[in-house]
Image (cartoon, rainbow, N blue to C red; front, side, top):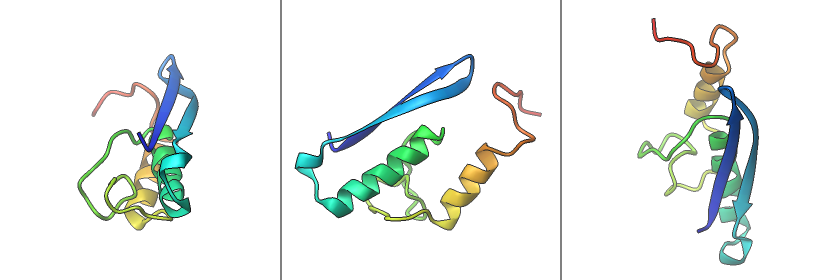
Length: 88
């Protein structure tokens, strides 16, 4: 593996996440891209996506958040949402 996030939740709330990077297999740019992607996943945006407009795409290797990433994080942490909220 290159990198992985291991988030822990209790009662529907994230309490922590451990990020592991196999630094021996990567250079600094790949390690930074891994940290960014795994941080996003630790914030609750789980999985990889094929869309090249987000750091959640494993194949791109972004070094900073894109517009799509910012929108996703803002939406996920909007005060109007709560853990376990029903779709309505």
